[in-house]
Length: 354
Image 1: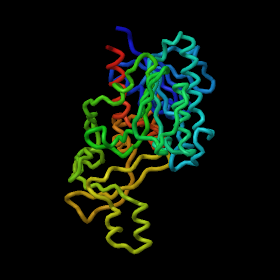
Image 2: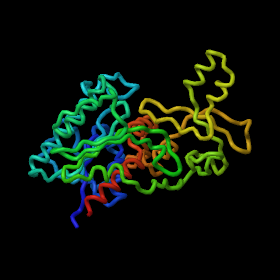
Image 3: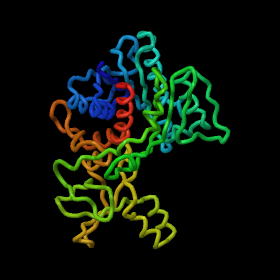
Image 4: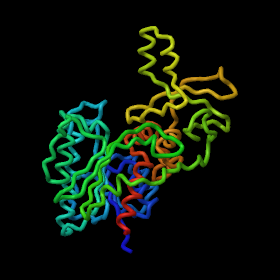
């Protein structure tokens, strides 16, 4: 059987390559420009070639791959960004990836890539009066896709015609792994240039991703919840409540005592989305010391666990030196949750090996 290969644009810390290797797919190359993520992925994937700046690549001259993944910059699409959409300086890099796909297909007589995967923030469904997502679909399919009569894009859908078979889906990482991870809502598009299998990749039920137990520090699951062994505890049982800072500020300003108390969170609240610009605090105390609580931020290790990543995935670079905390938080906040990437890679592996 032919080896299935992968190329990763806007690679970050190598989550798509990691997910690929878990399902028998070989990562051949990656494109990234930030030094810390490159160093991290070189440590984990010493045989994966790094091609550098996407704007300087020719898709017809780089190694052809079966699967091409990209999570283009989201700053202009995010609900906390400037909302300039695909016209923005960062998010317009989406079109560089589309260019590389077309160049590779032209150079290989339409054989590669077979599958393309795009990941981005939920806000990509709504900037610029919802025209940006229509532009994304048009770029993949070379077909004008009208905005739905409802005026908004559904959280899942498909486009089928003469071009590639395409499906999209909104996935929230907290529901895709056991134990439960941090909230992370992301849009994924799967485009199948070799058949009509996108729906099998993106919609077929599969077993939930099982997060590995901690291999080092920490480890007791938090009491009264299902978030698992995320928190570094030294063996004691923690009580964890994701802290709703915006809710607390509003309640404090309005002197609403009940709402102020509830802003410390509940047992079934998910951890907030990890952001590149900073992480959200949470309320924490030990089951055997209810008066000794505090409000603190997740550590770098805890943040890795909240993304479903192996312990210390981002701790060291290729030279064995530790990556700074600031760089680790930034890389994790820009990353993809492993369970979601793993679900998609499982589907790709299934359809390409049939």
